[in-house]
Image 1 (cartoon, rainbow, N blue to C red):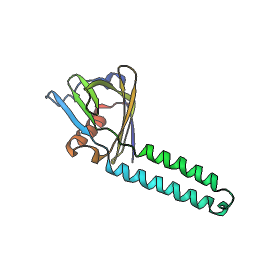
Image 2: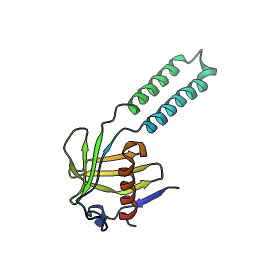
Image 3: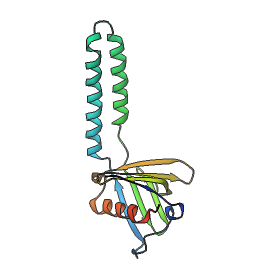
Image 4: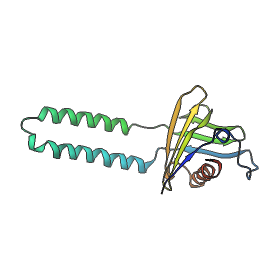
Length: 160
């Protein structure tokens, strides 16, 4: 079962939860997910096999079309499987911060909608300059305690 949680603008930039008295609530490295990579590979291989199956009756006449479609699928597959940088996500008394790769922590705000399932969280962030970043966070992307803290904050602090 999924939950789509609209984020209130006044709570999007809110400080730490009321029950937390420390200075840093969440400080986690977000690693590329191995599960997401396996699912991507399965989807890419399935698309390639379905393309071969669809063009098999037409193979002698349309090998060039098959070749171009296969090349396009391979290019999309390479793009989907490209190396994603490690990111660092932090929530402290000043709000949310996000660092790309080994860069500095930059302040961000949560976008207006968060998608949350038991096995995945999709969170959109917006930098002060207006650039948007959408993170797909699976349980194997970060430490279990940090993933649980993120989920707890998203469920308890997000309002209708």
